[in-house]
Amino acid sequence: MIKKNTKEENTERVEKSKNPTFQLVRGTKDILPDEQSYFLWIFDQVRAVANSYGFSLIETPIIEKTNLFVRGVGKQTDIVEKEMFSFTDQGNENLTLRPEGTAPVARAYIEHGMVTWPQPVKLWYFGKMLRHERPQAGRLREFHQFGFESLGSDDPMIDAQIIFLSYKIMKQLGLDVSVAINSIGTEECRNQYKKVLVDYFRTKRSELSDEAKKLLTKNPLRILDSKDENLLPIIEQAPQIFDYLSNASREHFLKVMDYLDELDVPVILKPTLVRGLDYYTKTVFEIWSGEEETSRQSALGGGGRYDDLVELLGGRPTPAAGVAVGVERVISLLKEKNITPPSDYQPDIFVAQLGEEAKRKSLLLFEELRSAGIKVAESLSKEGLKSQLEKADKLKVKYAIILGQKEILDGTVMLRDMENGIQEVIDMKKVVVEVKKRLEKQIRVQAEQIKEEKV
Ligand code: AMP
Image (cartoon, rainbow, N blue to C red):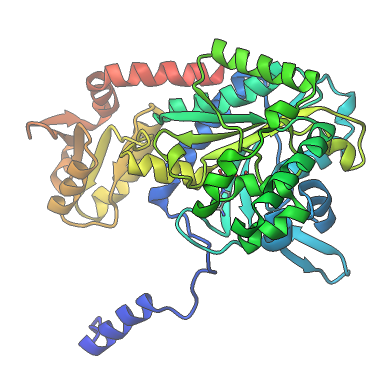
C-alpha cells in the first residue's frame, strides 16, 4: 500500500521548494522550457539572416586570458574595471569568463590566420556572456548576446550592412526599432576632440558629479555617455565630435548614413553617443526599441567600427565592424509587446490508449504514424480516457486515435474528430492511410518543407 504524506510533511515539502538549500547564483537564470521557444526562435532568425548574407558561425570559449579583455576592451572601461569574473587557475593563469564577444573573435581571427582568407571575414555568434554587474531589471550577470563581426574591410558599406542586419532581425521578430548613430572618428580625431571637451567640462567643474570628475582625467568621452540626469543639460551644450572629425572620417560617416538611407533604416543622429568600450573607431551605433530611445534605459544592442582592435591584439592592421545584441533584452521586449514565438511543435494527432495491451500496441502505432511524417502526441502515463482526451483538446489536435480492449480484439481503432466529436471505426491496417488522407493538406505542406530543408 502506498503511504500518503501527512499534512505536516506536505507543508514541509512546499516550504523547502520555496526556500531550497541551493539557489541560483545572483544575477543568473534558469531558462525553463517555456522560455526556450524565444531563444530558439531568435537563434533561427539570426541564423537565417546570417546565412543569407554570407556570415559563418563561430564559437569561442567561455574562458579567455584576462589580458585579452584588459587590452582589447580597455582598462578604463566599466567592463574591465568592475565587471569581469576573473580568477587565477591552478596553473597560475589569469583567466576571465567572457564578458563580450568581439575581443575573442578578433583573437580567433589572428590565431587562425584568417587574414589569409578572402576578406572581409564575416562571422556571427550566439552565446553566453558574463559580467559582474549590479543585478537590476534588464541587467543580468549571465546573459546571451548574438553578434555579427566583419573583419578585413574599411568600406562604409560594411558598417551599413551590420546595422541593417540587426535592424532586419528586429523587424522580422515584429519589433519596431530605430538606430541611434554617431561617429567618434579615428584616434587622432578623438585626441583633438578630447582636449576641447576637457576644457569645456573644466569650465563646468562645480556642476560635475564625483564620477564625472574622475572620468575627466581618465576617459572624458565617457562623460557624454552618462545616465546622470543632472549632467544632461551640460552634456547637451558640450562641443560635438562631428566638428573635429578628419575629412576621411567625415566622408566615411556620410557614406554610412547614405547607405542606411538607401536601405530605409530609420536613424537618429546622436552626437553624444560614444559607447562604453574603448575599441571603437569611426561609426558607433545603438539599437533602441521605439519608445525607449528617450527614456535612456539600456539599448537592445550596439556596435560600431573597430579598426584598431586586431592590431592592438598583436595582428596586422585590420579594419572591422560589428554589433552585439542582448537576447534577454529582446525577449523581454517581445513579451512586453505580447509577441510570442510561432509554435514549432503542433501535433496533428493524439493517440489515446486504454489498458495494458492497447498501451503496448500503441507504441508501434506511434512509430508508423511518425515515419509517415505525422506529428503524434500521447500521454502514456495517463490512464483514463477522459484525462487523455482533455490533453488532446489542450494540444489542439484535429484528431485523436482511441485504442481500447475491444479495438485490439477487432483489429480496429477509433478515430475521433476533436472539433465535432464524431467517431468512426477504422481498420488498424489502414489507419495511417486514413489519417494521412484527412491531414493531406497539412502533410503536403510539411513534405514541401522537408524537401526544402534537404536541398
Ligand atoms: P554591450 O556589449 O555592453 O554593448 O551590450 C550590448 C547589449 O547586450 C546591450 O544593449 C544589452 O541588450 C545587452 N546586455 C549588456 N549587458 C547586459 C546585462 N548585464 N544583462 C543583460 N543584457 C545585457
